[in-house]
Length: 360
Ligand code: NAD
Ligand code: IPM
Ligand code: MN
Image 1 (cartoon, protein in one colour):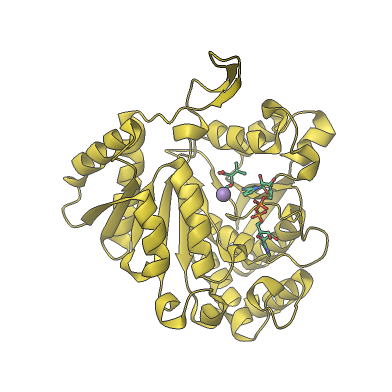
Image 2: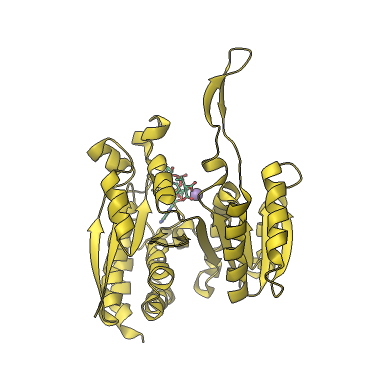
C-alpha cells in the first residue's frame, strides 16, 4: 500500500480541534483507498512560543520540509498579541510559508446548494457562485523591505512597510492562475491597484505579458476597491481571481461570507517543488476556542486539497468531499452555518466518519 508522511501543525485556539477532525477523516479515507499515513505532530505559532520560545522552531520546519505534505490548523491568540514582531505566532506562519517556498495560495469559494440559505447575500445572488482566488503568498507587503519602526522629522514614531514585487514573482503566480482558469471556466480577473501603486503597475504589465501564453483564457483587470464591491454585487461574474498577498487575504475572507461561513473555506499553498501547505483560510477563532463550536469543514476540505494537489490522490479527495456534502445534506452543521441550532464539532466529525465508507 502507499505510504505518506504528513506533518500536522495544530497551532492555537480552534486549530487543535479542527486538526483532530481532519486527521480522523484523512486516516479513514486513506484506509479505504489503500493509503497509509504517518502523522507527525509539530508545534507552531503560540503553541511553539510557549514550548520553545520561538514561533517556528527549526525542527518544525525541517520535519515539514521532509514530509509529503503539511496540514495546518490555525495560529494566534490574545495571549501573544502584544509580543514583539519576531515573537508573534503570525511571524511563525509567515516563516513557514517562506521556508516551504509556497508562493501560490489557492482559495476556492463555492456556494454549496445545501448552504445557499446560510449566505448573507440574497439567494439569487449567492446561488451557483464558484470562484477561485489565487493569492500570491510569499511576497508583497508581507515580506517587502524596508520595514520597521522609526521616527520621522518631527520625532514622532512611525511604522512602515513596503509593497514590492519582482517580475519573476508576478510571472510565476500569473502562470498558476492562468492554468487554474484553463481547468475551470476559462476566465481570469487580475485584481490590483494599478491606478496608484507602482508594484501594481508592474503586476498588471506582467500579467498582460504572460497572457500571450494562454490565448484560450479570457483576461480582465479590476481595481481592488471595485473588486471588493463587485464580489457582493454580482459574485457570479468571477471565475478565477489572481491578486497579490494582501488583497488576496482580504478578498478571500470577503468571498467566504458569500458561501455562508469562513469556517467552510479551505486552501492549498504550493511551490515549485517540495511539500504543499494546506490550511483553512480562517484563524484560531479565540472567541469560540475550547467550546466545541468550531466548524471543522474548512480543515477537512483542506485535507481533501492535500490529497488532490499535494499527493495526487484524487479518489481519496473526492471521497472526503462527497462525505462533507452528504453530512450537510443530512443537516449536520455547526452554529456558524446554522444559527437556529447547534451541532458541535464532535458530532460533525462523527457523521463524516460514518458516511465516508459509503462512497466510491
Ligand atoms: P478568525 O478567522 O480567527 O475569526 C473571525 C471570526 O470567524 C470569529 O468570530 C470566529 O469565531 C469565526 N470563525 C473563524 N473560523 C471559524 C470556524 N472554523 N468555525 C466557526 N467560526 C469560525 O479571525 P480573527 O478573529 O481576526 O483572528 C483571530 C486570530 O487568528 C488572530 O491571532 C489572527 O492573527 C489569527 N489568524 C490566523 C490565521 C491562520 O492561522 N492562518 C488566519 C487568520 C487569522
Ligand atoms: C491568513 C491569515 C494570515 C495572513 C495571518 C495570520 C498571517 O490572515 O492565512 O489568511 O494574513 O496571511
Ligand atoms: Mn486572512
